[in-house]
Length: 328
Image (cartoon, rainbow, N blue to C red):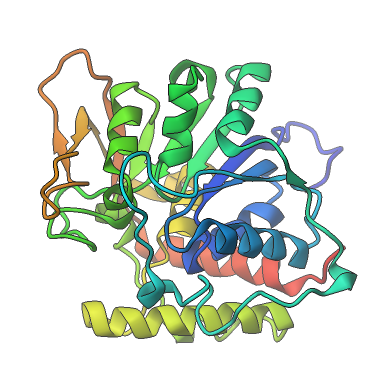
């Protein structure tokens, strides 16, 4: 993007909240290298893997694309009330499939891990820049719910808060009616919905419109980082072959990032719903979204369909640019 070009919109300030597994990794790569967004920080939450894996994966991925300048804030290590459940069968033992981002590469520099915990980090940015910050949450909502409990006005203070989570009509991927991010911390989802802190939701109904195969990654540049992405996605595809009987994988998180901020024209259907989240002790029901009859509960915009071909082309193009350039 030419900084001097007329009528170019300012990059949108963004905080990404992640539980960095495989699809979070791809969303991070795209967010860190897309000129349309100003990645102000990344907050980490336990979910796909434990919090120390999330923080390490996040920092290393940012460094690999020359974005060690982006602050990383470590957040909730467990849900608000429940025991943490993780998904090593889905994302591998450390969250990145067949690769493990453990060793240090001094040439990559260092990431700025901030001492401020995620809930306070979110609160500080929202209060200092009212109406400016977009927050895209790609994991359990524990950090956001904790911020609300500390008095942060995400509903009115953020430009918008977008969440990848839940399912309406699509079969769940954790229980029959429950999606993973919602099932890990149902109380956090309910706290955010009750407070009107979520403005837009991308449930499985939208993110499972697109199946990515290993052939889709064939045109990525032949770089070390592209190899890491392929090895991670290969693990993800293997999981989906076993779990869902499809020869590919759903890349929920980068689809949400692109559909919400970078190419909203690729969202073809949305509905407005007043939603609540089941917080019962029944493991078959907890984490299920349902339509609420409470008039005082704010409605949420829910994406329900996506231009699959357009989204696939956009994601692969942006991922190719992210993994193709050496760190600056």
